[in-house]
Length: 601
Ligand code: ADP
Ligand code: MG
View 1 (cartoon, rainbow, N blue to C red):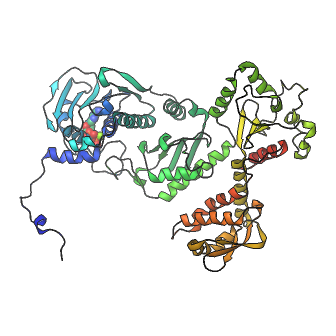
View 2 (cartoon, rainbow, N blue to C red):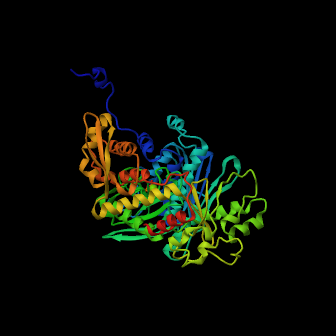
View 3 (spheres, protein in one colour):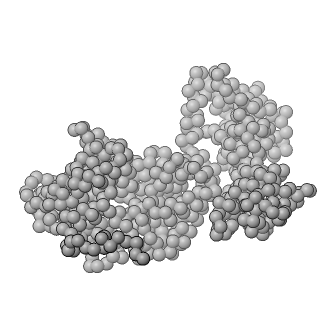
């Protein structure tokens, strides 16, 4: 039986071809979703026209005015009407959809935008006069002479006024303005040779929101200068350079240090052959590259340019062209992950400039500013007292050197500065030595039984002792696994853990878990006996350890192979073998932790 209502199937009208205006308006839904997508298309056109300077003005988040002015090649009057027709483009050479080197090629943007707005295009090409053509909701006029410098200005008023349904989906002016800003910054990042401005002209004002001068000089410096312009001065100091090549795919750019992260992915600028993309594969690769050094809720900063032969990537997946499809995704992912991990490993323990500067700034703001700052810089921690009573800082005083068994650590004797804790000695000219060898400095205090404060020659380092130790245990587990399997330690009495319905799922992975040092076997319905645990964990609670590992396995779903999850499982385990926060550490213990951190990748 057919469930479709026969009335719907019976055509009540003859089939007619859509008018050009209607077809354009339908297409507009795909190409221009919101003001920001119109801005993207217009700025891309300006770049394709070879502009050296592009000025964008918008009012009311782009809903009432979008104006993009460029000094590019311009459009001669005889081509103006054609440019507003669908599928008319000057950018495809023949029918080659593979070697696409310009942003545009579909010939869709101008007609789409013109079909849903009050549109005007003013342009002057070299050797000619300036002309203007207007269109109102798709009905195009004829070009008229007008005054204009070399280049083109596109003026879009009342976007979507002809499609009220779409207008309803616009978000607040603020949200739209933010999206426009994002588009301009991304294209500005891609084209450092071009100058950009973005101005808000709402209510007759003219407020510059963004300005980037054209950058000159060699590619690397110019790109970095542009990145600093967009992401802030800190960018240069807090990023590492990426430059890698595999076969015919190149990767170039910068990623932020793991200590310089963001709460969202907004500071990730990814480009494929110069085109800004938001591609799942690339974003996933970036995340994977940072998975060992970032918690899940933090996002790395990245500006990465991937280049490959056009034949290896399809940009024609979607009209907005922000998705791409690679012929060999695994290859691309591998290149990104390994290049970034390499660069981060090479950066070692370079601390973030912003954090150290801010921390020192915070101390210098205390009431006795100059003195206390000097005291901070030149004195060992035990002579420093918080200036204000209400500052609740529990400073765990380091024992004076002679009462401390530092000698065992092996640092005290070779590097005298480490133990400059005697109050009667003047350590004023006694910076922390061995900065090269000990970038994390000398432990000076423990705060709240949670943070270790270390002094370096020109800064301070704060270490979360639990997180740090957990990380060390994790790296040890990984190293053992890679060498000969994680060293196990048998429990005197096996621990019975009730996992309920999760038990079979966990037991499926008995062999894989054994290689990770976790020996389990079935123990009646729903229960599992834990026989061995990884030795480096010390004395963890086997109940909680297995429960956590089980959660991680259940997260995998039914089909997954444990292989992909091994690092996550090791990381869960590491958590159980770590110094908890809230434990008081001696100076020697703190220093030992710092030294081990330095020695660990
Ligand atoms: P596409 O960019 O895909 O070719 P568009 O509809 O965006 O399609 O533009 C149509 C044509 O109009 C372009 O191919 C180009 O020749 C011309 N054009 C559009 N904007 C400009 C501009 N700012 N400067 C010079 N020519 C332009
Ligand atoms: Mg275009």
